[in-house]
Image 1 (tube, rainbow, N blue to C red):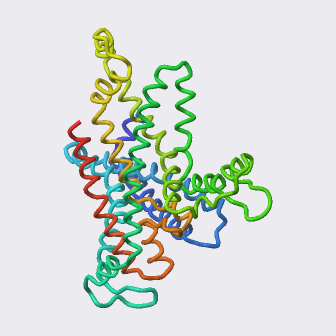
Image 2: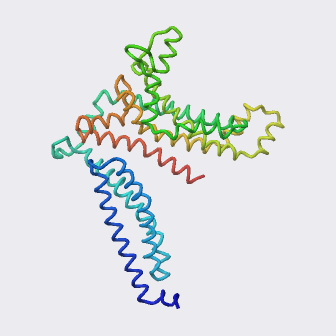
Image 3: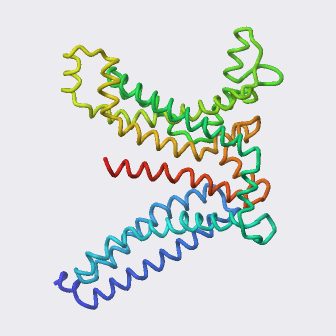
Length: 361
């Protein structure tokens, strides 16, 4: 009797009404939370709690409500519509927070758009001004250094560690220690390394490197002012961060090398070094390229480490930091947008190559 009552038209109408009411309530909650999170006077703990509750619980409630509404449609319509219900929120977020800002940035880059002024003089003046800036040559040179050395050392070290750690008793513990820096944000890592490179003008040297230098009888060094080596000191931070990522991905690929292939190479008299270069590396070459291109994309957009450590001073500037300074420090939104477009154009071919490589695999 209960099952019959639940399936009556009146009951189905009531359930549909409740689902629609829940959807409307969720829209109101999302609208309120958006305005609340933007309020500067709200306590940070409360902001974090609201963001967590709405971001996790609200999304789940939204999916369940939408699925409940779709389940009340005819079966032929339901099977076709349900996939779109689940991907629509992601597509809306992609449209609002990625596609629209990208198109807006490209549009702004063609105008003389400064703080307190209306957009004017449509043209290429921002791009011309950017390419005539001598600081851009320094930033591009530094970006090239990052692109060359960070993927080279992080992927190489990650591969070597993945192969060696696979042969020790405490493999999981060793890999956990090496992967640990990945749990630290770029800003947090920069703060940590800032204390390593720190030089006290007076008193005891609390920076690690200068403490060692003074202990050995040397003079304290301003490591971040030491040109051009200061760029390499910053690059070391990113290598430290990305080696664990490379190791984890490459470790799974190395474990996929057939043991029969390794045994056959050893029976033929190949040493471990020769096996590494002629068996393991060719087998995981696709994974190496994927990891390397992923790191290259990250390095092309590098900003946090440079901003926290030097703010681009002492000839350590990079293109992303120049974009930030032009847009948010000098108020030159047009020039900042032009630099953002240049970064976007530099990253896009690498991303396309990476996606194609993944699709082939």
